[in-house]
Image 1: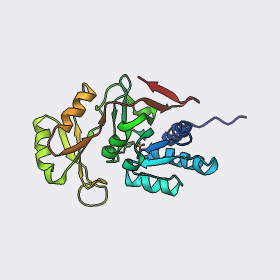
Image 2: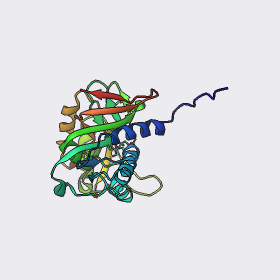
Image 3: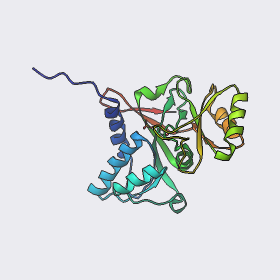
Image 4: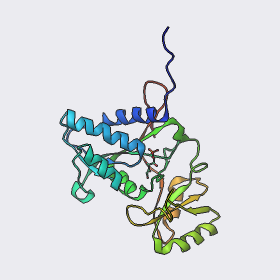
Amino acid sequence: MAKKKSAETQDDLKLKVAQEASKLVKDEMVIGLGSGSTSNMFIKELGKRVLEEELYIYGVPTSFDAKMLASQCGIPLVSLDQAGQIDLAVDGADEVEEGTLSLIKGGGGCHTMEKVIDYCAKEFVVLVDESKVVPSLGENTPVPLEVLPFAYSTVLNTLLEMNTAPSIRVSGGKMGPVITDNGNMIIDVFTKIDEAAVKEKELNNIVGVVENGIFSKCDKVLVGNSSKKVKVLKK
Ligand code: 5RP
């Protein structure tokens, strides 16, 4: 008797989109390398292509972790200023709003460098499993703000005045706040997001906030689901 196929795990779906995204990379491209578990799978898939097909590319990492992994996988790296132009950025997300393709990112605290690299790429492609696609942003996921440590108390006060629910992100196991690759703190905030682009600007206007995790633009989202073919969302 034929064996019943077991249900795919979230990691299986992430791998499916990571493999699909690696096919978008062509010779001589400069690729923005996102952060997080899905981006890590993409980096590994891309590394295989670099070694097996002698694909000639450069990567621009969005975090220290992405940099370490990419170099272990044999992907040649350049800094943003050396790269000049980024052809394609591939990154994960914590939430994708179905109708607008706005995102919440920064679950790993890397959203500032991710935003710089993702926004300046000619094409910005996001990889998620289907559980991350939601009807409206921010109902279940807080927006992370990268904040100068010097200014954390004034930022907290401003967020409380805005009737939001802020909390300083602390590192599991260790004492004290999470510190980003840029030496800053993260404040996570539950806030109503009617229009992503407006909220993105409003949060960045708070003095002491370096960058927030609302991404009001991306070009394409690859969604891993149980069907064989990866679903593509475009505006
Ligand atoms: C890191 C990010 C990640 O891309 C986001 O948190 C998704 O992570 P994962 O692929 O592990 O679910 O923004 O700052």
